[in-house]
Image 1 (cartoon, rainbow, N blue to C red):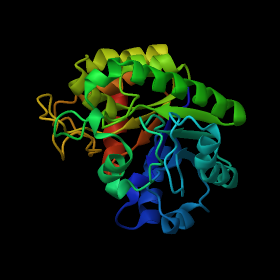
Image 2 (cartoon, rainbow, N blue to C red):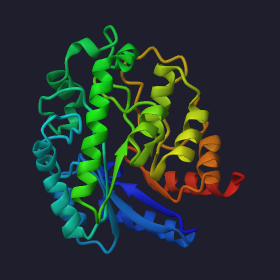
Image 3 (cartoon, rainbow, N blue to C red):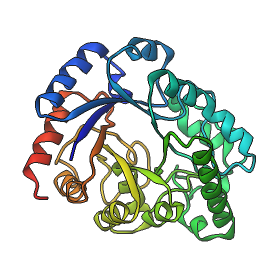
Image 4 (cartoon, helix red, strand yellow):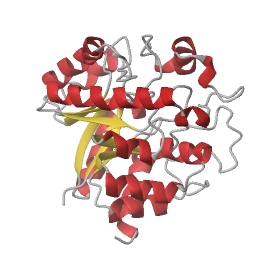
Amino acid sequence: MTIKIELSTMCFYHGDVLAKIKRCRNLIESHGYEFALQLHNSITNDLYNKIKGLDAMFTMHAPILSDHFINLANDDFPTILASFQNTASVMQSLQSTVALFHGFFMTQKPIKNDPANYSKVLSDAIDNKYRLKDTRVMDPAFLKTEEYRNYQNTVKKNMRLLRERYPSYTLCVENDFPGIGNGNQTPAHLIYLDCPIWLDIGHLWASAILNKFDFYAGLDAVCKQCQVIGVHINTNRTPLNWNLKYPDGDTHSHLSQGYDMDMNKIISLLKKNRVTHYTIEVIDGDVEDIHFFIETYHSVNQ
């Protein structure tokens, strides 16, 4: 079983990018693991041009170098295809075959791909009725409505159509942070889609707190009942008694055992379920995060 550890370009917001890639790659490969890079939808043209020539495997956190997010809840399939086109072009250029994206926004309006202003972007495009009081999270009550189920069916249909349009690619839906209008929040949501999944443990952690399900049981259920292609590894510092306010919620923090989220237990569950592809999706992640992951992976029982 070959284990792949890749760095998200979220790790490259500061510092010497190429030097960081080199030292992280050396560490990963010194342990016999495969190295790769995942282009995050926040990537700039400058960063893309800096790394596109590297001799490395690439995966895509779509949309890449695109104006708008991919929204499978849109009723117009040609609009969905258009929003994926730039990503498909980059995949062809880099000989990449794997892409993942957040694809369930409860709106028909276009959503700008502007990660630096993500909360405003969602507020501009998504009806405020989905918001839980004065927070930035989704009111869980809407997940039980007929409106939500109609959106969910549209997402499932359009994901099938998109995969049929690109049969040589592995296209995955990533589970959402439970923000306003985000529809893929719980293990049941992911299982229902019946498509490849890229699991973000930090998003699932926040969703478990809001939607009141057991995080570790949910993580195990997704691994056992979904086709999990890969996992975003990061520590979510959000406490179990989260007040649903920013900045907690989706922290993408350095790997650590210093918070309520039990990274040892998480990595053990992923290892037991034979997950083979891990993305270090940490803001300014570096060799310390690689060390933490590898040492923990080696130490936990399978």
